[in-house]
Length: 330
Image (cartoon, rainbow, N blue to C red; front, top):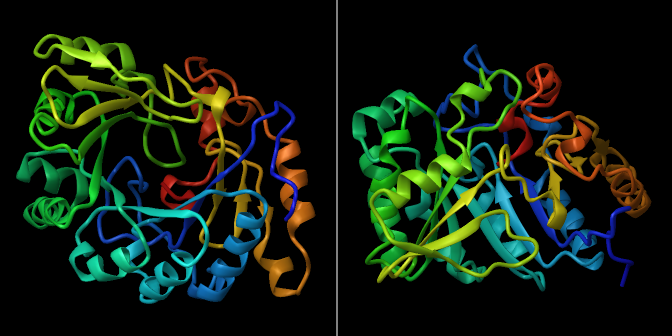
């Protein structure tokens, strides 16, 4: 057993997020740039056996949870093989998806021991869905969320809240949690990445979200764990929960335990850190990558990849030096 991955602040990293692809069947504006998106050539991507090999190394180094992300992970032709292989590891497995293709993988997910999924859905309005995603898959997404619930999966709906776009729907999403015990909604503050036209004025803050929900519902805060990204709440008498991921105004860096592996095999020690280290090339050369992993996490900053506060004037240009969100992995 290898030594655990611990940074200079004493944070132990046990949660690996693996991006399978930068391709997606949707075109959400906060994730993809407004201009034409250039996707990675297939030869740049980690192959299924390479994903498995790196995952096994990370599990030996103490990883207890793996999440598959993208882009949209289910657009990969070999995703069933990847899910099956990772499902055999002694760690929990989950994924983040837009759920358009999820009906094709119910059996694969159950066989791999997946019992919880995150589904990205930013509106409950069909026309607005088309505006945000540039695609007409609203009815399919909603039907597949219901399918997942009926099959016994825990569903965490991720809602990126953007001022003037979907902030009037916050309480509609909270309402979804009242009667369904396996429904958990998480509101996410709009975050800055290359090409997504972010600025502070578009953020609906943690405090604003709490105020909006409090206007309609009585709710209580639930106890959490050190590594939680969301502060969780439950409406009085409700069966499910809602949470707020306040990356910008209410950060959770103190308990960070996350490791990010991009689809082209680059290691990121923070979502917002522009520095990366290539694991795929040395892996293909038959080299041991453990020393690279340890050294990269020894350099991890305490918060936000070492950048200035989001509220500083230069923050936008700093964060836009990072990859596009779709090229990192959600």
